[in-house]
Length: 302
Ligand code: ADP
Image (cartoon, rainbow, N blue to C red):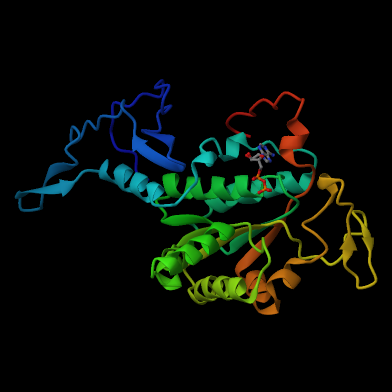
């Protein structure tokens, strides 16, 4: 996003010179122009006079309108309010090189987004390792820094919205279309739940549509792995699945099933084509931090 000329100060405690502030309003993340922001080019009118080559004056949109558009896009992204503090700088990779690598992949994804066509990402790993944290950090950065349109959806919530829609005479298409068409879409908690035939049909509709559109990027998170066996984390059962101790949440994946078994071959093979698989591992961050003081923020330049 081009930075308009402003009187906004880096020392503004509310926005730190970003020109916008985020807020959790009724469970949704909302962005608004910071009070310190005054555009010196248009004085807040949103348009300026310009001259064409023959010297005739005309009104044109001021550069600061771009800021407002990007905040409108942010407010349309369906981001839950609980992700107010979620960003790259608040992610502290602990326990595993895999998580450091995941952070680097996520940051590079944003950095390179407008340089080259990106394939999607699928963050997989045990609960609480920060998969959603990284997926949301990517989406927030793309919306606020790269002028991208994007949306967030918890897959479980989407299914519940569709069911609710039926009772309001709303078709499933009406509910899922905004997500199908979003240029960037984060689908959280892929494969959570029973994955009934109906649930998989809904998932297939979204994935197939996005798979067939070359300009759409999808980022997923899932508690399921693509691997059939992880010898260091459990023992193989007769049918080559892995058993984990359910009493130790830090060691267990979502269960004995793989992602492919949960979503079926067709959806899985599409996911494999659409996405780079990013594996994360380790303890549930909240458990790891319980009783410990949170690590200091590494600050900029990490
Ligand atoms: P997952 O999607 O892997 O189940 P989440 O991203 O939802 O996990 O993380 C659960 C909570 O722990 C969130 O509040 C998240 O911000 C926090 N969290 C997880 N990992 C980290 C981390 N490495 N650094 C900072 N916060 C983390």
